[in-house]
Length: 368
Image 1 (cartoon, rainbow, N blue to C red):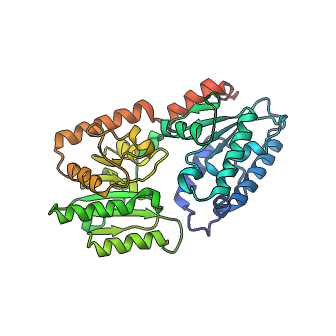
Image 2 (cartoon, one colour):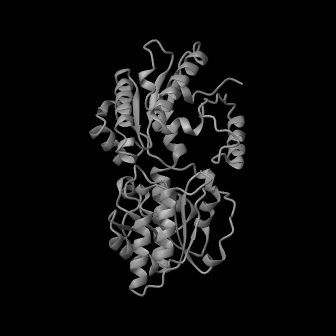
């Protein structure tokens, strides 16, 4: 039951939609779009309305099901527990990939709504999944989720998604070598700390490669934060290509032999998926802050180089180390990153393990 996004919405990606629809057809899945659009997920009242619509639709479609589970994926559906009834024909799993306490701590009304929804869900017997050790601690300590209600469901990748990635052309300035940084255009991603770090390196006489900077949104106009970053690039005279719109093709640059390093300068991070994208693509080295879930994937000197969050000086030091890495150490980091990805973050294996343990009926083969 995805939230319906109209074709006119800037976030609508025809290629991704076609790929997803093909996957759903092969899975023989019934799709029930939930009205509301992206705008509904941005406001507390919109999320509450989405939760109500989803529980009503689930109740209607699963009335005759012998057993079923409703999975609320991410923050907009943390209120599902408040709408579930004792006699509903489905169990509930909530899977938050972040929280408002992490993403927008100033929004106290939305945080209270999340607390209320999570508490109601647990009281009704629901489970809450933790995508990382960091998120498990956060949900237990800040939201009061009891340990008996928690399930470890480590975030990861579907490895098959990275086997045949379409190659996007590099900007000409990047062909001789480049650094890459990408993510949502929000302050918690720490892009201004990266730009400060590159200014420090340049001031020290370090030759800094071209920067592909992709702090992206789905909107047609630049956000205030994006304009701030553009101004910093200009004022610091940083050699950079600024990419404000999201494109799934950006991840193809992780396979480029011209990549000198992937930088993840986050100030807070519930998990941190981008290092895994790098490991899957054979990109090395990865430079990341020691923020939240990033510490579980980027280990200094093992799978990459690390720096303190919100510390441009320390980040400059880590990037400098990455720029002087030798071929042997790069290959070792590439191999270690791939091994970590396969051991803990193969999402298909993670999901199968969850299903076997908690909803084994979902693993039963359907009759032909």
